[in-house]
Image 1: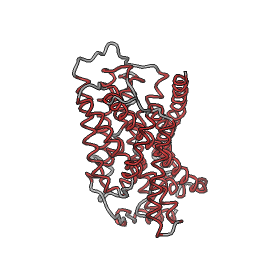
Image 2 (image 1 turned 90 degrees about the horizontal axis):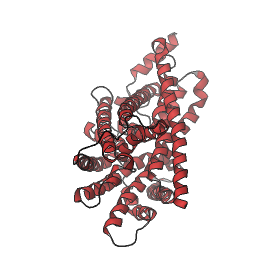
Image 3 (image 1 turned 90 degrees about the vertical axis):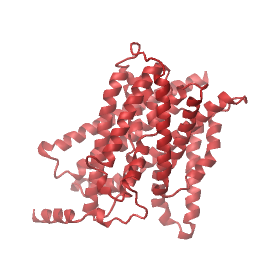
Image 4 (image 1 turned 30 degrees about the horizontal axis):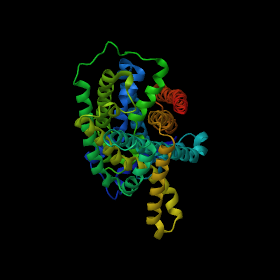
Length: 438
């Protein structure tokens, strides 16, 4: 008992914020811009389709619940990371390092799995954001193709070729190596996204909306597709730790009001607004993103399509940062220092080309969005935070072990979203491929 108290005292004595030495720290506003951009991207424009799957009534309630759960999972994961920093006496930990440290400082029976937890988190992060980069490449290419097919008299070019054309500018953009340098691009992207949002609202409200023919409760078999899209749209947990770790005042990240609370509240409100009214306007005709439903014969709609392409292009490096950060930590120590710069350039080009290749091979935008949301974001944003907090706080799970039961519910929701979402998405993809082959 005495040894346990002394250990607890040593943990509390260490303040990780005082020992952080960040080369280029971000202000609260820059951190807020990066966090909003991480959660508020192409997913915003996919929300009307999600509401079409669930019905507008279920969509509103479901989005609020998912936003609360996702925000709570971010909160408990950051709190756990800070607790692990104190236990390990380290100034900061990444997402995967937090998972490993939580197991290493948990009950004795799970400590041998610390390295596995670390590697599993790394694997999940890497493949999640590779999937996001594939989606972004395909989304930009689809928007550009729609414009070119309408306004150029040349024969239509397959979307895969537009993905190919995008590789060079994306390779150049991804040579930016510091989050601080990405913050201005995130700010520009946020402005353009809000402009696109405003244009979408203009087309939604320019004529009276009809509610009578829209479903309050949709087909329950499509609920997994709704959850997959909303989780994909809402989650940015892989970017959370890089943002929090590079803040000038990380103590402002959690709390109320805080960077995280402001970001999640704003994101939730915008998602509900566009989801409801976008569905009421276009109904079952909705496509992967609402900008693809806008008319092609008016300049505001054209601006919206151009803006969203630029927005996703500027956002791409922020999500790419997660992938390259994982790769650098494992490979750079094994490469001579004089080759580090060449290695960075070559690897960044290879990853961009790999993601572009996936987009060329499988140009199924809606299905890839749902698959990434169901499979990887359910793991990263729900299942892992619930398990990690439980393991780390095993000695103190609250009165009546309420933390344990709460996290069991979160993990169950994550597993339900994963299994059901993947099942529905794969079924949709197979059906679409068969239609294309007929």
